[in-house]
Amino acid sequence: MEPQPLTNTNATTSAPNSSAFGIIRRLTWTFVLLFLLLTVIISIAWSVMDPHRPRFRVSTISVSNFNVSDSDLKGVLEVELNITNPNKKVEITVDQFYVWVFYSSVGVSSAILLPPIYLKRSSDKGVKIKFSLENSSITKLARNKVLYNDLVKDWNKGIVNFDVKMIVRIVYEAGILPSREKFLDIYCGNLDVGFVPTKDTGKLLGIGKDCHAEI
Image (cartoon, rainbow, N blue to C red; front, side):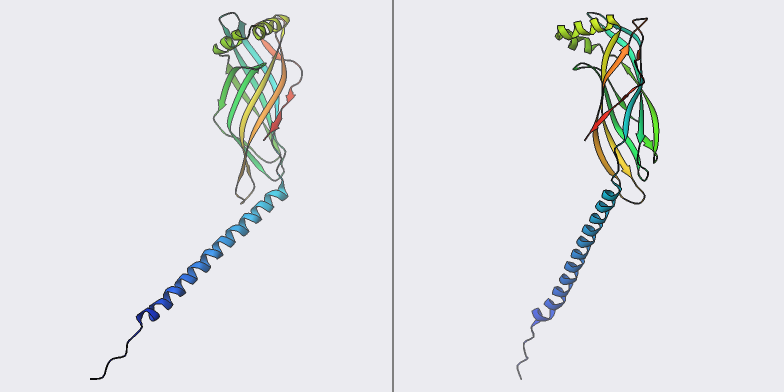
């Protein structure tokens, strides 16, 4: 009986395995390169469009039932903002909208705007925000007697200076491109509210103030 020749099973099975691995590796690199190429194209497209930030402006401020005492700070403020989208090719959504009203360095009220604000290309929209003055603010003011006395003095003179600060998320959208988003700090300062002739109601003096945005 003649001996049977030995067969190398490892040699016959390793060839298909290495071939399959090579195909998978090439496909993986192809997908990675396509992803990088697409990312570069999208970045170039957004760079070419170079979308501008929306512009914020305080149009009016009205105050009602305003009163300051040793134990109480009360009143209702209504701030009307005008938000403008200056872009001709990009639409903007403003959401996660947090707003504070300050007297000097003390926050006297805050609000959150829940519905997103949608701005078409080259459009603007008016937004009204109502605040109730917080009694906790009088505690903060009372700790700083100089600041409290300044508020009372300004109120008696008929002009109180407020600041409005906001943090917003801006979402840029342009056709089929993936959206882009940024968070902005918005500052609207030196808003003089006049309380003449009655001390419990006030209006913004002048024709409004532009706000400044920072990333």
